[in-house]
Length: 372
Image 1: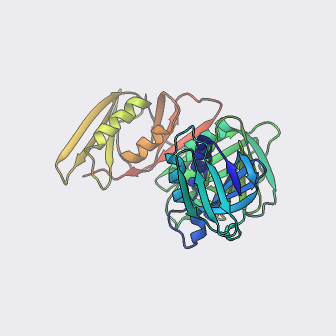
Image 2: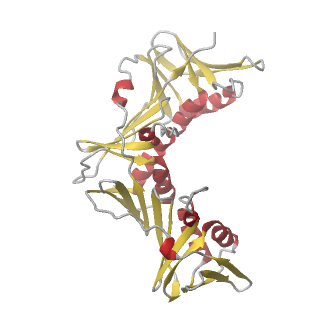
Image 3: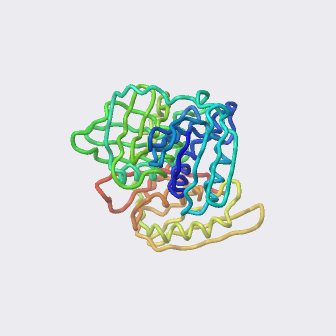
């Protein structure tokens, strides 16, 4: 196999597939990237056996072929080349020796047989929807941060996509916070069943998509995202998602409206004085003032700030993990945010005061017990 490529374009393609490569694997072949050249089209593939990502790239092909190339050294080499370099790759089929030549350099490394590289899963499509990339990116941004990392609860390690008539609902939760986002599906588009997509796959898609549209296809066991000469295929999470509706309170009648950016900034300062274990910040709401306070009993520090707000309801004091609240506010797209409370032991609901783009979003955060 032999071809010449522009280093900047090759680097962008490799950066996309690099996110799939596992840091540790019992299968050494997964630490490689598969190059497959046909004429002037180079396809670059990486997989961790659960997710595979393939990027197509136009090059100047001279000799077709396949090879599995060690990912780390390849990525580091290409990343270090000047942007205007046009390296020539030569790969010897019999020995899998890879040579990279530039005007001023010559680099060689040993690859693996392409036959050892796992093939992409067979894909028999059952559903297909086309989404605007801005809409898809919005879904990923708003939900993936709140998934669980607990392997004992695999269903919560993904985002639930759920059809609701002409709407598409996306849900994520880690047991401490929950996001429910509802958007209108494009006309004529429908999804027939609930699916749980791993957060890792969605984050890879979110980092790779640009403008345009994405085609999202489903089989019984996998999901495929196709966009901009890139294909991401991921195994679906075959679990039953928790009954999230049952944990969303319906009687949070104490409503506070505050400036989002001001609240984030204040929380970050006050949280510097919170317990390193609980990260607890107390929200005290009275009349037109929100008081944020934290106390580190172990090291004797404390902090307090006040923010003007609009509030309807009886005075309340409630504690939250500041990291969770900052995360939630950082993934909202609104200047004014509404907090809805019920009691110090009940979950708080966070919503934008003014809805944008016709979407409906609710974020929920569980309280923590206030220090005595």
